Image 1 (cartoon, rainbow, N blue to C red):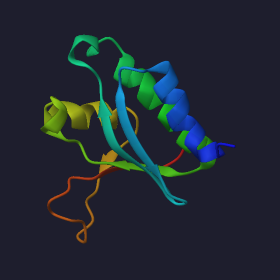
Image 2 (image 1 turned 120 degrees about the horizontal axis):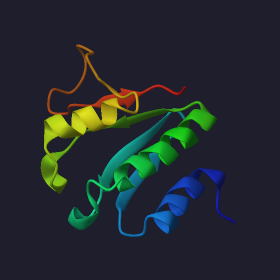
Image 3 (image 1 turned 90 degrees about the horizontal axis):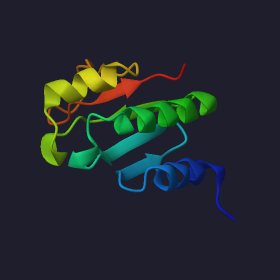
Image 4 (image 1 turned 135 degrees about the horizontal axis):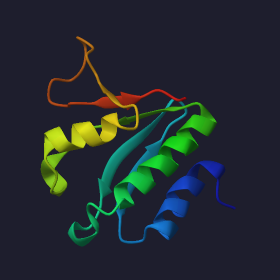
Length: 109
C-alpha cells in the first residue's frame, strides 16, 4: 500500500508524465529537488499547474516547501526566482544559509 505522502508525486507524474520531478518529503519540509518542463511545453502553463498542485498539497499538510532555482535544466535564475515568487516563495536571507545554495522557501497557507 502506498503512503499518502508518496501520493502527490505519483499524482503529479500521472498528470504530467513529460515533466521530470524529484521531490523529497520530510516531516517538516517538502524539498523540490527538480522540476524540468520539456522545452516544447514551456510557456504553456505546465510548470504553473504542477506548482499549484504541489503548493495545495503542502498547504493541506501545513508543510513548507524548499527549493533552489537552478539553471542546470535550461532556465535563467532571475526568471525562475520570479516564477517561484508568484507562488509565495521567498529567498532565504538567513546569515547561516549555505552560500553555495540560493534556497527559496514557501510557508504553508
